[in-house]
Image (tube, rainbow, N blue to C red; front, side, top):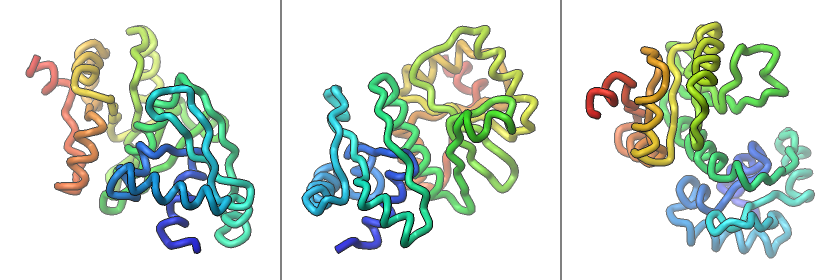
Length: 220
């Protein structure tokens, strides 16, 4: 039997083509083990399948079967997406999915997942996500590897043409957050937050509470 939560999980997996126990265990389920138990049952029912990632963590990606994709299309008007697995972007993908889920929990929040194919002709810069805040668009960037200073300069110049409210950079830990904030070109619209702090802030305060570039630099 497909539960209401199963349906929401299926739609979330379909949004990216894949997901991971490490994501589902921090979003739709209280623990990774509870997510694993449910996914194993759905796997036995032929509704999801697993792909090995080749990594220690996450070890497996969760993929919808063709039967489930057809069910989403027929019963819920959800266009199925095919899964692609690139080992070098898996960590980025897990952080992106967690950010997507938790920002969506904020009041009046809508999060748009972007692709160069769909948004490249409309935007000067295509971010990972767009958080449609009541006061304006916030570009959300998941940063797991540092680019050159000149590349960030080009990115920020492109962003400035898109009339955005803020840019939120989400990092995997405090060390990388400080590294990016102190080496990026200075811009008053930049905000920074680790993925763990984002999750905690949304759960406890229903707010993002990111830090400005200026405040991070002052802290050293």
